[in-house]
Amino acid sequence: MRRQRAPGVLCLLGMIQLPAGGVPDTGPQAEPSGRTFFVRQSVGDDRSDGLSPATAWRSLGKLSAALRAGDTAYVGPGLYREQLVLANGGTPGRRITLIADGGGRMTGDASGVVVVSGADPVDEGALTPTRWAGVYSARLRGEPVHGVVEMDGTQFPFVDAAETREHTVDGMESRAVVGRLRSSFFYDPASSTLYLHTSDDGPPGEHEIEVVRRTSGIYMWGKPYVTVSGFTVRHAQSGAITFGRGSDHGLALGNRCFGSHQGIQVLDSDHVVVSGNTLFRNDNSGVYFLSGSEGGLALGNVLYENVKGIRWGSESDRGTAAGNTTFANVEAGISLERVTGLRLIDNRLVGNQGAQLRLIEAEHEGEGNCYGPRGPEQLVVHRDREGRYARLAELRAASGTERSSTEGECGPLPAPVEIGDLPR
Image (cartoon, rainbow, N blue to C red):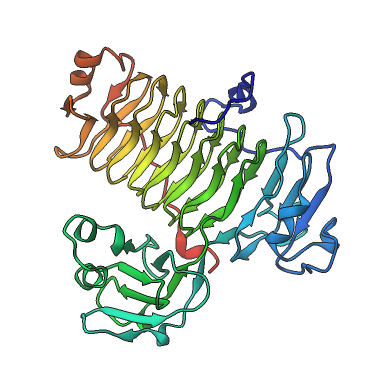
């Protein structure tokens, strides 16, 4: 049974100003009526009150219970190996606002990147060889291991053997799957044992390995009217940033999310705006509106090297994707699955390996989009059960939509983020 929707509709599109280039203004303003908190990894102290740069906290977790409607938090540069779970939400006139102050304008720190990580380093020397070539194991106490990543490589998450076709369909034992597949892992909770297969069969000591311990980086569950701006969030089990179960009217502005299952997850939360973010190398999707998340807006984002770039599913109806750039995603640049009333406006879908647009029991209205498949194996549109369209003209003839869209060169693409320059 779907949850009861709040009466009335707030049009959040008017809150985001799109300049001529189509990229949103992602600079949120502090709520004037609330308190202001500070977190500084450089000099912070969790025994302080957190109410000034001089008395800043060191840990993100201190913000969890402290933030209430109308409050703002500025977080200084550094690497935070934590999960921030908000205990409270905002209200229509009094949002909770989380701002990564990478420039140090408010915290007083030197400029840098504000990174939230769901992963922790491991002692590669504790990983010992097994009977499978390239596979190593270790007993790891503490929180379960949800994922593995080689930080010296692409930082794309390893495949969980328990979720592969070899295990779920063919019935192969999970450890044997790890023996077969490079860049895969299996964690046995009964013995607290991790099995991993390195990307090149080499010993773990030749890599920099981290294990994913936390489900999210910044997490809202039933917490409406929250703004998250400017963070780099990596390697979480589920969503790097999660708006869950009634976190309506959330704003995710100008963040970078990578190496997680989903970069930004919007689950059963209405009218969430995802704008100006860079979302890449997530093993499900860059952003996913699911479980009846109605009226979601994806505006001016850059999405690349995910399995799917932007994804709408499971009755997350009446959403809009405008001004996004999706490229080099594995299955689709944009995927619409069992949704209605979706609008796609002025997006660029270029070089996505399976299809630029995927439609599964979904209909949409499109205008001003640019489709740029690069190679005969890349479709313009893959409509499940109905057709595979290699050319935009074929889609127009079949559906009557996308009359003002184009196919061909879509202009220069943004440069990928240099992950080697990020703190770790």
